[in-house]
Image 1 (tube, rainbow, N blue to C red):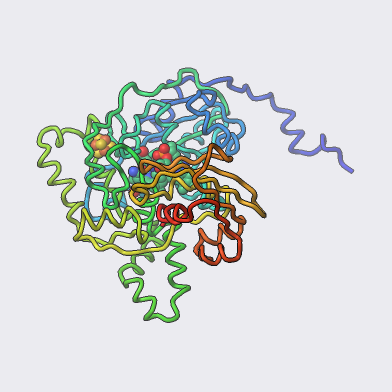
Image 2: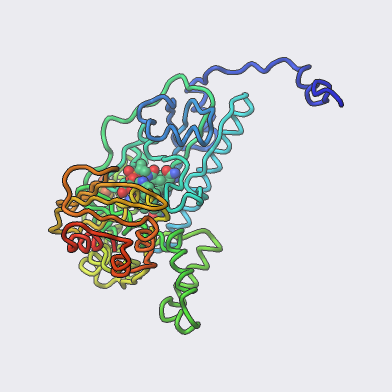
Length: 442
Ligand code: B12
Ligand code: SF4
């Protein structure tokens, strides 16, 4: 048998001098590469920085050689994003998203020519869908952008760049050598706390104190994305004939779903983004005439007659009916359905409806048995939720459930009455507290 050392690839490789490997890369050289590749702004962070603590494990799973990270910013055209015509805004989101991906890839190619290894995770889509509905994205771009001095998260939780405002999309490149001069967070928040994002959001997802109702945003804005699509498919599957499907889904909605499938998914709102006046190069119209800015940018979004997707009995539904009675409320199914007890514990705070918990103050202990044993403590009070692993403190109610039974309840495959009757769920304490808990998660 031929020796490995005699293989032509190995002979050719051994005949060449070892490449001189760079130990680090100068920040100014790297910056030039990134700007040349088309980035509007960039910042650099080494992986050992404390701001990366939460992300480090995921980053190393993605590219084990990572030593530093590039945060990439591409600009959007504010007027397109602000148009009440969603096709204009969505086109801008898609085009800028593609630009972020292209810029990141060009940077990786330029670095490869210098013998530097790097990878470019996609700016959002596609994602690791085997983790759905868990954390599907491979790297959280907002904390990286903040650490790299690209801006701060505003009240609406989007990163606001000091010059370009929130009209930016973010990207990242993971590099296998450290960078010499790192960037650091900017020392002020460009957010003006004007709360126009709060006023513009049709489902009340952004609260004036900065809380974010994830499920309200996700149910409406993402109707034609992941969870909304799953619900739509189930609507088709549960319709016995075309006329029954048509009672549930209008022709316009079916056609819209097709447009999203064919040309890239369309956001239903993103109004928080549209309304934001912050950023040195964006703020002038707001500064010059605030009233006019509101009539031109915020009012058309508020007045727009459109369908708003909500879960029945959710905070989102109450909000639309109260604030925007001219918008049509449409009930849709749940978009966040845990597939494991671990997922239930993790996702709980994202499905919680603060408004539905008004007046409730209780400590819950949950004990899951069977295939996925787990324990957790949930405290609900002052319309806030706190979830901790394990049994902590004295509870007002103890719920013991088989993992399988509880998941079937969450997925609306079994009723609580049946689960109690068959002892798959047992309650110690006031059962009314279990009913009150259920109301917080419609
Ligand atoms: C998950 C996600 C969402 C979620 C949660 C939004 C959020 N506030 O984070 C949803 C689906 C609601 C969403 C909506 C939008 N998004 Co988004 N999204 C992401 C994604 C993939 C990860 C965000 C992240 O890191 N979150 C973690 C921490 C840092 O953020 P956080 O605000 O503290 O955490 C919230 C959520 O993430 C959520 N959450 C936390 N952990 C988990 C785990 C699971 C399993 C789930 C489901 C949710 C969840 O709960 C927290 C608050 O309640 C990033 C892309 C990326 N790879 O980073 C884009 C990104 C943040 N999105 C972006 C955009 C543009 C939007 C929209 C404007 C889209 C649109 N066109 O309508 C809206 C704005 C809504 C808003 N006001 O935040 C941009 C923001 C750009 C910027 N200037 O900051 C990003 C960076 C994409 C990009 N490449 O540019 N998004
Ligand atoms: S709209 Fe106003 S409050 Fe909301 S993020 Fe922008 S500046 Fe901050």
